[in-house]
Structures are given as C-alpha cells and as structure tokens.
Image (tube, rainbow, N blue to C red; front, top):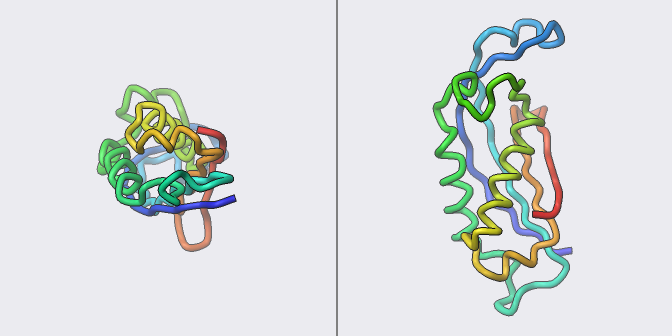
Length: 132
C-alpha cells in the first residue's frame, strides 16, 4: 500500500460535558497538529498517490474553517463533546467530501483509505481511518 501524508495545524477552544473530563469541563484551548495520510494499492497514471500540492491546499482550507474557533459555539457540534477522536472523524468526513467533489483530482476518487491523525501533544494523539 502506498501512502502520502500532508501536515498542517489549527487552534480551537472548547469544553466538555461530563465528570469524566474533570477540569476540561471548563473552556480551554487546544492546538492540533494534523496529519492526513492518503493510501492506495496502486499509483495513479502519473505515479502519484495524490498530488501533494492539491492535498496540502485542501487540508489547509478545511482547517481554516475551524482555526481560532470556539467549537462550543459551532452549530454542527452543538451537544457534542469535541474530543480529539471525534474531531479526527469529523475532519475525515470533510476530506472525504472534498475527494468526492473532485477537489483532489479525478484519480483521488480511487483512494483506498484516508487516515486523519490529530496530534494533541507530543505524547498523545488520535486517528480515524476509513475509505473516503
């Protein structure tokens, strides 16, 4: 399986509901380093997994929508604990939508999997991987 990874970051504020989260129930910030890994069994006709420039631009644009946002105030996240795991899945859905819309080129529709990893710190991260 071939893979290509692009990396960017975004900063958010949010809070969590539930005793499980202790002090994180209060509003706090997080800076995520985001890795999006595209996977395919065979390279496309140009010898690529996906175009790295297009992939970088798409990921940057998707993250820009969330950057410097208080996720507690975003309608699409209302009533949801925006945990690192939850956000990895939400970003995967956004990347998959971009792929289906052709934003990464026609050959990207043939990807076998996309993995989105949110690095919360140098010692903790979460991922979501599935077909786009």
